Image 1 (cartoon, rainbow, N blue to C red):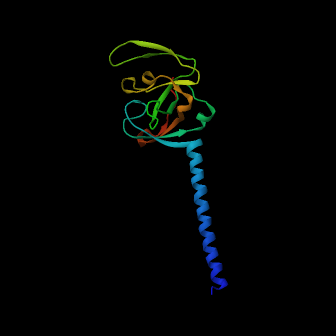
Image 2 (image 1 turned 90 degrees about the horizontal axis):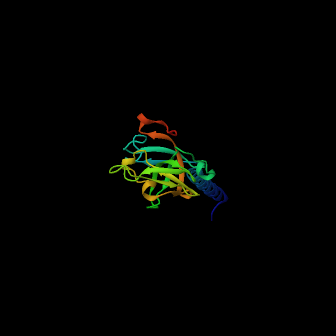
Image 3 (image 1 turned 45 degrees about the vertical axis):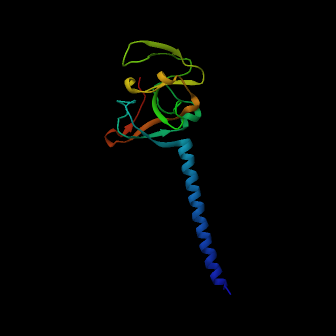
Length: 169
């Protein structure tokens, strides 16, 4: 037969365990909300954003509030879900908003031929800072607002480049 004293101790252990599970669940919910709606960390690599973002792996802070309120502007560095490969997120500079007339070099490595396009409603135009090595709107066209995932505002890594990533004029 189990004494009342041992049930009290068992109940205390169960309550403490349940409290820990609830704390961890709240922590994960908070992290999910923060990562989805407020701010997250992104890894950027490759030559498309040279010289702004280096070739090596750069850790960037991305704020997500801009996405929800549609407050992007010309010159913002943004994370975009790739229109060509939805599993991939790319880092580009926003160079045109809906209604803007954009003139761009079609193949800057091989010719001076340019084209002009008016960005359709509900879309933006994104380009890498390094036009010679960037797969961007010049290749896949205007990007729907729904593919914008956030605005990059701070570089965390590498340490020599720590600091804000502002707009360009």
